[in-house]
Image 1 (cartoon, rainbow, N blue to C red):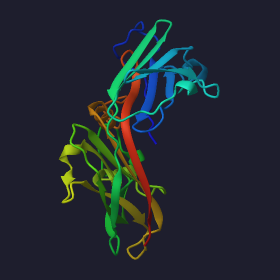
Image 2 (cartoon, one colour):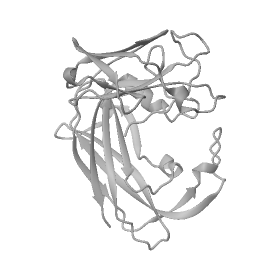
Image 3 (cartoon, rainbow, N blue to C red):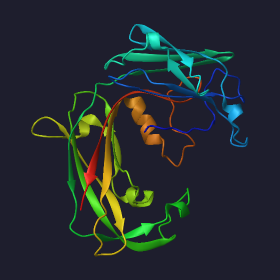
Image 4 (cartoon, rainbow, N blue to C red):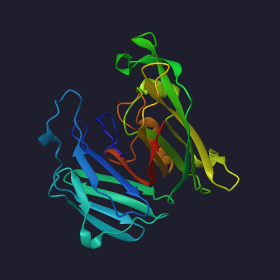
Length: 288
């Protein structure tokens, strides 16, 4: 579910200027076994993509969780993936700090963070209108990067705006949460979603508190239909909630920024993101 894609630009690094940098990605999920770590080489924008050029050399990869060190080895089935050595694998316990170090010829990369407390979805409520509403439908492929030109390729259509109330068990901390509403069948364009609220990243302590002490959030996603008397099509909605620290929030809020060529990185000496998170999700059938 969690994928990042980055292209090299200026960045502090221990490798000589003008050479490739390591691109590292890993998501350490609280209460779960240690994850694979994906490692590739960056390229400049003027060099065509060639997979052999992206394969990093053999590297020494070491994960430290609390006081335990876990070495990683390259996956024989994927040259871009490193796996924890089975005999030393362990569970990523909530609250522990972690550190990842990657070393090789002329390469030294590291990342640090904290594994948050586990998060659990409690309830999901859907509010579906009886009939669709008129809406302006936009083709997001025709929207320029430098401006939001709403006059381009716009048409009038109809949507069911589905409001979703999500509750979860909250904690007193400085953590952030991200909540996403993803129909398994993709209906609405990103521009429709831009004017609704199918996803949000925010400090957990700013969420509404319920009478029972849980946390509450409401979002809306759109289901387009062809006419004003069309029934809403049956589908499945995936609701996902993630908890992470400030580093995660910086990454999550910058990965779709039109002003950046890659998300904000927490990898010292390279690019990418290695973070501690807790994830819970549920699939909800949505029936007319």
